[in-house]
Every structure is written in structure tokens, then in C-alpha cells.
Image (cartoon, rainbow, N blue to C red; front, side):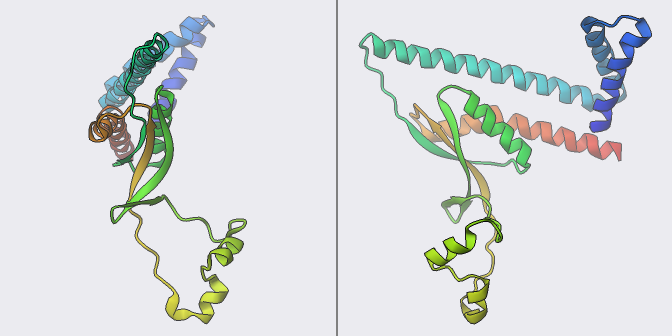
Length: 214
């Protein structure tokens, strides 16, 4: 994937030099020409770029829709009309595993008015716990362990039978706050269908492109 993108950018930079036209339009035309050429060589590169552009367009449309809905609720409340809003926090289990993809999903949700990515947790035996474990040498960890009565490495040597094995990491879950949640299941399904599924498809295309390059 990276090699195809670099070649596309190289063609874009070479196009103004070959045509002796050092303008932004020539640079854009070179990028389009490079994109068409690379899409012919590798069809999945064109499919990835097309789906990525569609996802960006959908996100912009979702932001516009959320702005209009939020403005309508504010105006209705300003003129004295009663509006029923049910704010709350919903845990959305994620199929995404790549940290970059999860960051993109959390950012898109936060950019959409009315919703906010609060935290990333993990679903372990039906409970939502903080995602990931803190590093043992983090600042303040030993003091916090002593204050909580958690045995440190020094204490664990004295208490070998109290040492517990590391637990398996559960499925990642994103905590999302929304100002109006009438149906948590539908809200969760909308996020997974509209935002997570396209990111999963893009990640799968990147994996296929990387596999074809090797």
C-alpha cells in the first residue's frame, strides 16, 4: 500500500516537471493521472481510494445532519417547545483491532455533534474495565499499589501464593456519550454499521494490498 501511494505521489510531482507547468492544477492533474495508472496496475488501490473518499464524504454528511438535528432541538427549546432528550453513555464493542483505526473511529464520533468518545475499555466477563494495563515502571505506580494494598514485586516475593496470573485481554469497547439516546441497541448498531464497518473494509483492503506487494 505504501509503495503504491509513494509511486502515485512521485508521478504527481514529476508531471509538472515534464509539462513545464509548475502550478497547483498541474500537480493535481499529475496526481489524478498517477491514480488512474496505479488503479489499472492494482485495482484494489483504486477501490481503496474510492471507498476512503466515500467514507470521508459520508462522515462530512453525518456531521452536517447532526448539526441540523442539534440546531433544531436548540431552536425548539428556545421557543418553548418541549423536546425529549435522553443523554447517556453506551459501550460499543469493537471488531477493530488496529490502534490507528480505533483512533480514527473515536475521532469521527467526537467530530459528530451530539456524540463524544469518552474512553476505551474492554469487555471482560460482562464487565467494562479500563483497556490495557499500566506499565510497571510508570511514575507513581508503586505508591498507588502500596496505597491500594496491592502487593508489589518486593511484597510478591514474600507472598508467592497470592500472585495471580495475568488475565486475558477482553474485547475492546468504546464508551460513547450522546445527548439523545432513545434506543441504546439501535445507537450501538448505527455506529458499528456507519463508521466501524467501513473502517474494517479499508483495513482489509490495506492488508490485501500489503500481501500482494510481498
